[in-house]
Image (cartoon, rainbow, N blue to C red; front, side, top):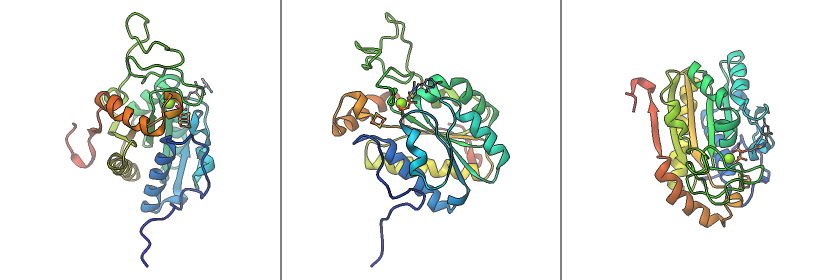
Length: 253
Ligand SMILES: Cc1ncc(C[n+]2csc(CCOP(=O)(O)OP(=O)(O)O)c2C)c(N)n1
Ligand code: SF4
Ligand SMILES: [Mg+2]
């Protein structure tokens, strides 16, 4: 009998500590599947900082480094420069990338550092209990925005579209945005991850895949409700697709 579906080698066969319906586990699986398909398990290194993905190094079956919160792009820069033939995956949450480590990601991207960031945008600070993140939508409730994010009267600022922001920088080669709220989006997201990893292995510049992800616990929803909420609220603002693609001579979009 032909085996059609199995557990990726690059992911340990253990249960994760993530909440039911969380997107992190699905994203881990996609990364592991692509690494298996590219046959580079022995040459992959993930840097995973603080946030719910602090557990990621327990689950991946390849090397990992855990930098302080927000400093992952700096650590990834050093690792990739020392080991240019390795695949370096810089795994970041939205609090990590778009608040605590904003300077790090902008300058790493602008320098064209040759690692790939996997940016998990769940529009909230998950690990610490649902505080407002830079990516929290206008009107979305958070523990620090109990009446909803209000950019004007409450001075809470506007949600940041990170792909579009980084697209203005010369060092960025490939920026795509996917989602893990349904099977079609999961499949497309895997294609973006593969394209970014292949570009990194060819020695191209900075690559990033932003992934819209559910946090049912801090959104105060059941898992089913959370995937619908993502579709109806996040996707209209955070447009899916390849936001910038200058690989293989493709024109910048
Ligand atoms: C420099 C620093 N600032 C703040 C914290 C506290 N902290 C830990 S996790 C976290 C939020 C994580 O949110 P995010 O990066 O979006 O990851 P998620 O848990 O949502 O996946 C914060 C503020 C810290 N550990 N270090
Ligand atoms: S708090 Fe949110 S991001 Fe963290 S594990 Fe639970 S669902 Fe996932
Ligand atoms: Mg988050």
